[in-house]
Amino acid sequence: MSEIIIEGRCWVLVDKDGFLIEDIDTDQIYHNAYLHLTDRKLMGQYALGNLEGWQDFAQKARPGDIVVAGRNFGAGSSRQQAVDCFLALGIAAIVAPSFGAIYFRNAVNSALPVIRWAQVDEWIRGNNLKSSDRLQLKLATGQGRNVNRNLDFCFTPFSGVQLAIIQAGGLFNYAHQLER
Amino acid sequence: MSLTIIEKIISNHSGQQVKPGEIVWMNLDLVSARDFGGPNVVKHYRREYDDARVFDASRVVFTFDLCVPACTLKYADNQQVCREFARQQGFRVFDVDQGIGSHVMIEQGLAGPGKTVVGTDSHLNILGAVGCFGQGMGDVDITFSFRTGRTWFEVPSTVMVQVKGQPSTLATPKDLTLFLCKSLGTKKVALKAVEFYGEAVRALSLDGRITLCSMVTEMAGIVGFVPELNEAVQAKMMALPCFDLKNWIASDQGAQYEEIIEVDVSGLGPQVAVPYLPHQVRDIEEVQGTKIDTGFIGSCTNGRGEDFRQAAQILKGQKIKEGVTLKCVPATRQVYRQLLEEGILESLINSGAIVSNPGCGGCAEGHVGLTGEGEVQISTGNRNFYGKQGKGKTYLASPAVVAASCLAGEIISPEEI
Image (cartoon, rainbow over the protein chains, first blue to last red):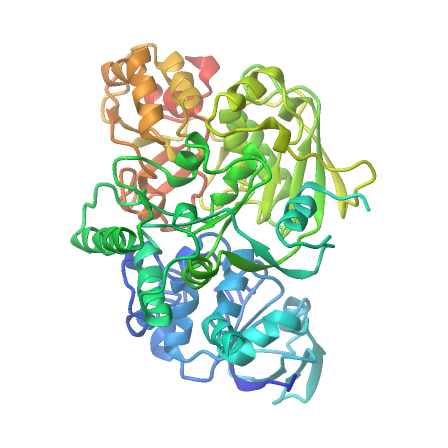
């Protein structure tokens, strides 16, 4: 299978003391109050709308940007909107040491690459990565690079059905391809 | 090869003997969606599959439990979208009068030992309480499963949690559960299946097992099982429709566990999770005296008959503190009826409590149990994330602690009442 390469400017989700925020749950990503929405286009405006210090994320983010967060990103509810709101903004990938199980598969199914990189926190603390740095991510080999600082790292690559779903552009496209 | 419970269930549903880390296609015994997620499923389904039939109308259901009956026009619309789709497809709807979907599945025998169930409820792993592999999923996954009856799944490894020691007589299943949340945090069993062993969990009733298994989600686990049965729970399970103990799955001798974690619960007393994390748990003495505005008893974690009996035993018809409101939401219609017949609802109402119709309560902001800015709530729910049920602060505790605190107007141990 061919490689997928993503490159974009990153937003590092840190708290007011500069620490990477862990356990960001789906209510902080996309609040309960907007669960009735079914039109993805309307969801972008609420992305991170309940995360202290990041309520204005939707205004700041640009298509192609990458979100970097602490471990257990997307804990909590099964809401697909917590993935769709980032897709609505054109976010290219989310990077974190680990993800909530449901969040991870929701993202894969919608072809939003969720990058499992164990050393994120180390890199932030060591000043090797900060907001506005450009990251390059190769999904099938798990090679990452901070383009601004010429620093390389390795993350958990995608393989098998997960990579196939992302390459197809999501679970539905993948399934339709199998039918053909 | 020796297998753990989750490995056996997935093997039985994928036509191959699976190993942790493998991604397999798993067949599903039941696929569900709720009034949240459901309308998105309908929208995706029509776009992707037009009017093709769902894979098996007898194995697809909608359960409305979130905003019941709809108290916003958006939810009223969404529920009607789901109803019409279900009628057209010929599958069953557990409507706004039935209560929490996962509990209805247990009561109606739709979920049973060894089965696989998915739905748009992140606490669907609660079905581990009856030996069933339940899993919450998003609307894309569920749409695909409506059509195909299967899903891709990465086989999780299994962690064995050995619960040692005897809790104090004041500890309820929720106290045990909160203490396990504290001990396991969100790292130790993250993305793993959990098997709980030890006398303190073996002794749990079915309702107590539901409480424990529901909060495996808050421990970031995939699913939790309590493999060892006691006589009472066995009898209770046998009375469930379609429940066949022959299908009960135990792990094999020599099954591979990624880790064995021991948790000592000797002498455990009442526990309270403080805002804003479910695993930020304290002994009650540390938060005793915190003033409260409201109490909430219900949710998929503590909405069972035993939970309300526990509360009623503390209240004994005494009036709750002036200025405090206590909101009670039984999990299902069956629980509601049972409590009505036992006189428990009357007793709660005599104490000044509000008793609402069955449903999820305020967890997803659809029903009873929301907080305003500055409001302090003590709740039997499972999540107290910032802003989840409003801008107030939510403490999580057992029904006994919630009832006692509502009498006192502040967080207090039931033994002080």
